[in-house]
Image (cartoon, rainbow over all chains, first blue to last red):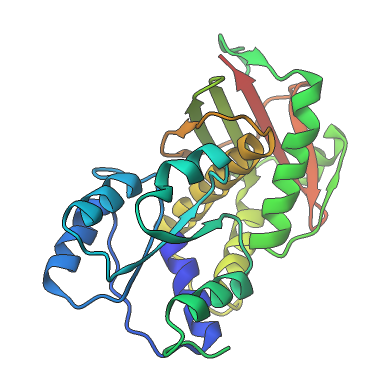
Amino acid sequence: MMRALIRRALRLSGANVLVAEAANGKEALTILETERIDAVFTDLNMPVMTGTELLREMSTRNWNHIKRVVVSTDGSNARREEVRDLHVSHYLSKPFAPEMFRDVLCEVCPENATA
Amino acid sequence: MSSAKSALKTLPPDLREPLIQATSNVCETSFFAFTEPASPEVLAQIPAEEMWFHSAVTFTGPMSGRVTVFVPAGLARDLFGAFLGFDEQEAYNNAELHDMVGEFGNMVCGTWLTSLGRDECFDLAHPDVTLAGLPAPDEDAVVLAVNDRPLVVRAELG
């Protein structure tokens, strides 16, 4: 459902981006292995492979050119600290307004976003 | 709001107000819905035959328990439309509606726990969403009016 909300936020932002969707970290890894991806927006609480596990795997594989944004209901400092060393550039706490998402997108993909 | 009390303990008063604030925050930010405290009498506004979504999220961490959000089906459909920006003419998919109510429960639980300012992390289970009847009266539950329609939230500690 959050993916649907992000799709909506992207539509409203007017951003010129192509989006690939994954239901969990494992599916995301498969996409990252086969597609050229500029940025990953990931929840932390996911089945099969969590967002934290996905971010760790991305770091292990040295995919540090891919920008990483966490989208989570857990906005605690402890959780932010947990992912701080995993090359996360932005941490978006749910609930968020569409314009907050747009602002993050502008910073992560400035060449594709419409401010 | 089940008729049989579970083994979980009811919410202390100092955790009740943050739960109300968290629910209001989620409703207003993600669903563009106006929320205000209400009395249990507002539940009588909902026709007895209307079904309710029950979205339960179990959490563990510095404290453990469960947050359950009870949403009348009609209100859930309206919130869904606001959430995704659908207009009234667009068809609603029941599976997506279930997902949305689950995400609603997830956001209420996560926002509430974050607002408590603990230094340790909580782990949230995936929401358990069911469609059932009117929740039974429970004086420990929080009753809110969302866009003038009732919504019930209950938090229990284990």
